[in-house]
Figure (cartoon, rainbow, N blue to C red):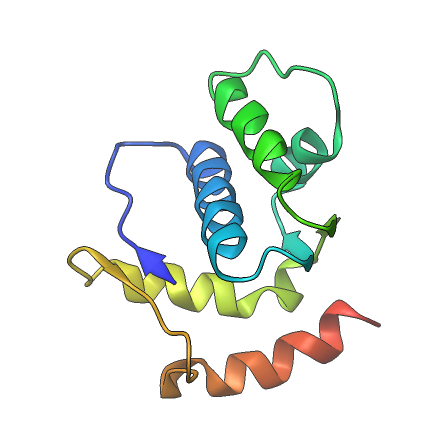
Length: 124
């Protein structure tokens, strides 16, 4: 899934909003066992913490954490940037997207190589 988020957000705020969108999307499509990974340590720590975050996007973190309870089981993990190339490729692709793009049955060709690379790097 990708969508252009053009709200003048800084990088961390955009990562927080993207995490919320990913959690909401996954809860609708597959609300069972889920692993959420991201390379923005501040966002990952906020999602892992039960404490309210007083950051400008603290309400987004709170909403995302409440949505995580919709899953039977979940984990939130920090992934090195090298292991998160799919997210970065989607972000670049989204710059030229109107509305949102969702793929459920197939992987777009421009992501194939990124997927093959990300899985081994994430779990070293």
